[in-house]
Image 1 (cartoon, rainbow over the protein chains, first blue to last red):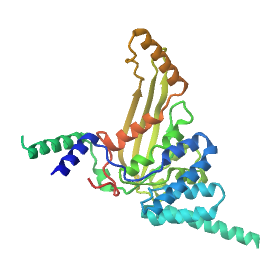
Image 2: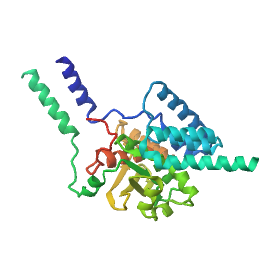
Image 3: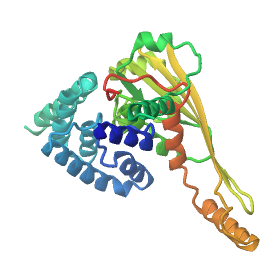
Image 4: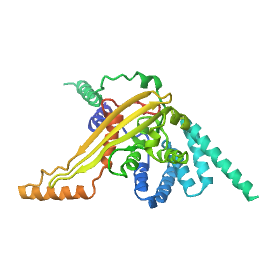
Length: 120
Length: 211
């Protein structure tokens, strides 16, 4: 009984605020800082990668789009191998992303093929 | 009063407190489309602040995803659009929504336009205003939902005691707001009201928390 009173009291106090569904690791704030000052994009990538690694370690769902953003941030600094693996993770975590992620991945693969062909 | 009655009263209070008043709008198109995923494209700017659309773009994903939708990564989407030659948000908004949805495999596309993002200066009080228009289109191009939201902020100056102290505080506040008006909390508040708590908030998406 007391448990229920506690629950009701807590609900009354917190009003309508729902606990967040996801742990964002300040994604929006980091992106804002990166857009404000492009030199902060790299620190955004590092912080998000650390955040995602800790979510994976505790088997917590990574919020929608975060793997893909890390893919793009890696691609923009020239690491297409890391980019590809993040795009694959986004695709596997979120079926809604499949069309876009498949296109991004096959683009990267095609680019890799072309540069291999050019090198040999 | 029995404890059970008390509990019941509390529960009613909690429930009625949470219930949002809905405007009686036709939501049948939105209900029929029942989108799972939303593509948020770059924001069109009708304010004079050139940074505003980028800044607003960073605030849209979190509330929509917390509402239960798969939200396409905004930075990635913007990069893809640029690669396709769409460098300006106006160009993107001029495209048929159905075509954009198809390009990304999205169920719905959200267009956001900034109508105001400014600070009106006065000696003792500065008012900061944001005003946005939101339009959601389905993958077949039909408009599913739309809303507008304006938020005004004026620093409160009324708790400094003596009239002279109040004047000084007001002047300092106005100077601070003038030097660096902080729009981001207002933008977040506008989004939260329009997507989650307001009278024509979006329905729960497929990943919404069970209530």
